[in-house]
Image 1 (cartoon, one colour):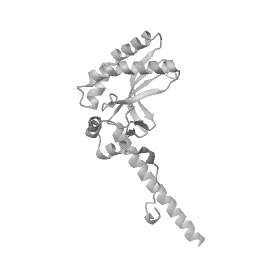
Image 2 (image 1 turned 45 degrees about the horizontal axis):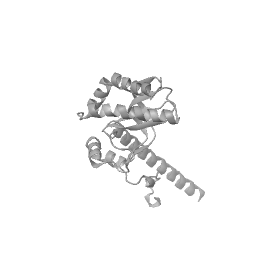
Image 3 (image 1 turned 180 degrees about the vertical axis):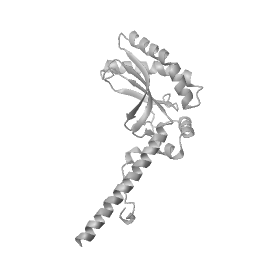
Image 4 (image 1 turned 60 degrees about the vertical axis):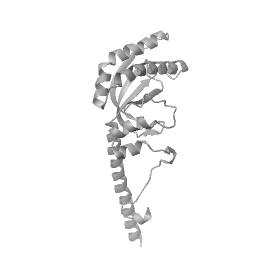
Length: 206
């Protein structure tokens, strides 16, 4: 009887492991397909002081005014990336102009970077954790909280306080993402998201 129980336990453990590995691979592939279709935008503050956080938002607002105009004709991720690269110096000068006008002398860095990000929510769009391409503006010591959005497709120009992202913006996401990827980022009730453990072979135990 002990041998039978031991064998059953081993089968259960192997079943959990194999199914968990399969699901993990699926999630990684889904996240990568999402990340390959997006460019995220981050403005990172000098510190978490009220003054530095307000300055970060002022820089963000001025830069977005420029980007909204420059990116309005972009119809692909490559075109958006090229436009951002071509305007890096202008964006940096604009950020410095805002910073100096507010009485600060912080340095500014503007660049692209691939980096890991935790799960982030913007309205009713939720991006899974993983590595993404990001267009970044770093202010000063970069020790404060960041402001983020998605610059392509253009989520940045939607009010982040809205509970629901407008349909026309979602339509642009739907154009560049697979059906599975689109469904993954537009879960309507995120409070119900949870991890599940399933048995791959002894399905009657699920």
